[in-house]
Length: 197
Image (cartoon, rainbow, N blue to C red; front, side, top):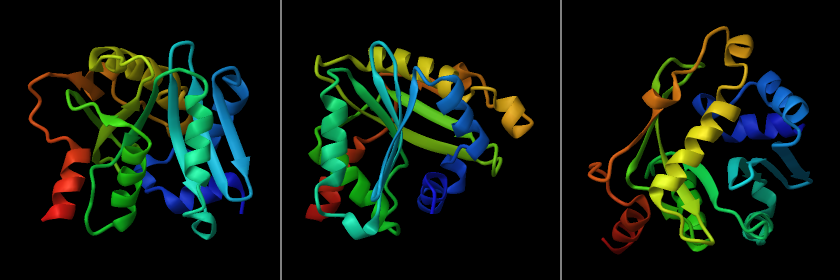
């Protein structure tokens, strides 16, 4: 199985970029977009001057629980920049979504509660609500994380979108919002509450 097939099997269709899109990023934005691949993992990420964005992390079921995910995140943290990633809200019917959140919680990521992120999938045409998690060595504010997310969305997610999908993603200001009074719970705190209830 090649790296794209591994990701495609693991991630829901509405979160997947097309193979052409990812190959173009690797080739045409090779100074920003990277693939770290091994026998049991695939890590796709973008490295900007002031932050990192983890696009996809896949660790094979055969090697789970052996610290591979931790090693990959540690390697990213060693670059000394804030790390941002998108997660779907926890779905208690899908134990993987809860495991993923617990993993990032253990790795010291926090939930950017003031950032709203809602993007229509070009694959399903349905609205896909995601949450932003981040880790910052310098305690970046959510406002700073929001600005970095906007840069990433424009540079990576919507790169040549019309060419690859026949239509464009929504403009960044429709997809990403920031509101300190956004009515949302901390998804990582919620995990602990569900465990204790």
